[in-house]
Image (cartoon, rainbow, N blue to C red):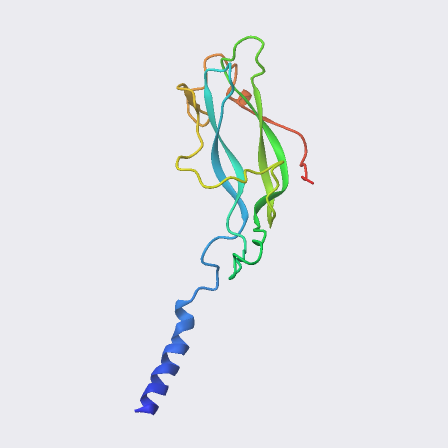
Amino acid sequence: MEMLQGLLLCLLLSTGGAWASKEPLRPLCRPVNAILAAEKEGCPVCVAFNTTICAGYCSSMVRVLQTILPPLPQSVCNYHELRFTSVRLPGCRPGVDPVVSMPVALSCRCGLCRRSYSDCGSLRNEPLGCDYSTFQDSSSKDPPRNLTSPSQLLEPADPPLVPQ
């Protein structure tokens, strides 16, 4: 009987590697494509545009004796290198700057959350979107009426900026 149990154990251990993935179960911190919304007070249209953000999991640790020792700092997925893209919002009132700048992730890394360029808040119940009722998708086929060309929606910005 012991020999049968040993044989069964060897069989399970040898085939267990076939089930296990060599990749992490959750994607690690990396740039990913996302759709963000841009809006501004004084501009009646909200524009959705494609960009690259940092997302994914970072290693973290939790103390077993939480009441005795202070909590460990947790690392989050942050921008490492980024550049900014400008989005021109159509239909803004006179005197309102229609340009909104948004970050584009070039590379990401795990580290402490820096409020100067990251949202360190908790998960939200609803996705971020536009507050105003008029919505314009920058990838739609119909550009806003007051633009002379669809290329005015997205304007490239400065060279890469590395946050400190």
